[in-house]
Amino acid sequence: MTAPVVESPRSPYSRRRTTRSNFELYGWVFMRASGVLLLVLIFGHLFVNLMVGEGVHAIDFAFVGGKWSNPLWQVWDLLMLWLAMLHGTNGVRTVINDYASKDTTRGILKSLLYVACTVTVLLGTLVIFTFDPCPANSPAELLPSICS
Image (cartoon, rainbow, N blue to C red):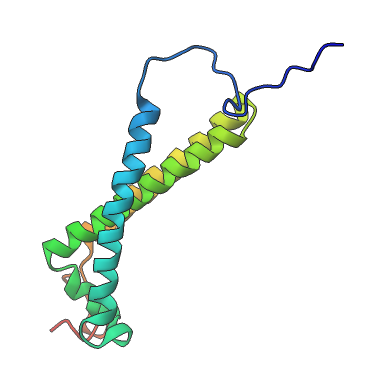
């Protein structure tokens, strides 16, 4: 009797060609570095929004408008958005590579993932840099109370 051949658990699918790229290593390092930086960004964000001033009760349209009028907070929130989306996308990409057994399924899922990430990052960046709580030539009755 011959023993059955068991595939290695570390290789959920076989690659058609071997690559000499270090992409997975760079992805692994990125996950660690972005995770540490995200902790700093998120806890700084939570501290400023919830602990400073009147706390959660002060968060409204005027608070966000005032915060995003400062370039520091625009860049802070932009970094948080970009790192969170890229960190999450890289994690989901790894899960797709591990669990999608067919090449076609894996390709479709990763394509949808990349499109969703790109759209979210582009729209979020657009909102952060074009947000204006007091747009010009707007009727006074439609403007928030912070606009004079």
